Image 1 (tube, helix red, strand yellow):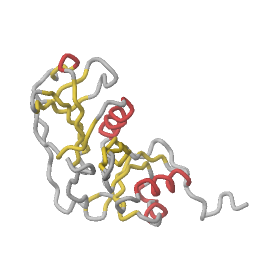
Image 2: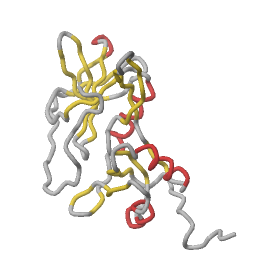
Image 3: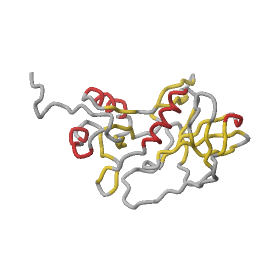
Image 4: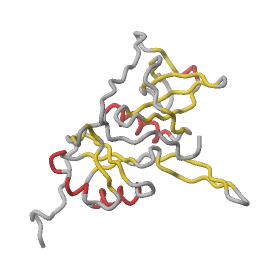
Length: 201
């Protein structure tokens, strides 16, 4: 046995922040499996997507943020992660990993776990913040939009400049105490690629 040797994969504590990993398209699942096997806590959010074949339409699970997944780790000890087949880089600025906001990860986890249909959405910088007071998404905060007569809550991952939309019953939503406006400080050299929808939205 080589327990305790330098070649052993590190076991990651929950105290480490979340980071976004940029991976090759269609490698998200295999990278997530590698991370699990190495003892890391990973998060690969998935969504339902309809794919049309010549004779039928099927529903499959695809990554909510194609080319990305999230992982907790010590940023100074990221080399084992970068060696995983399919991993391109850790998202950051000027090659310095930037943590993802813990509340944003929690919001995406809540949304995915609720089972409510959702879809990728172009990133939104400014809007009216609301809070869901009832139902499976209770406590979730985001930006409220009205599209073709239906209201949707937009939840964002600022670092990736990606958003997710979920349709809502307006009776479940309450405005924030103050009419705040979200702002994003655009920092140059952010190594995240442009938004693309996995299902052709």
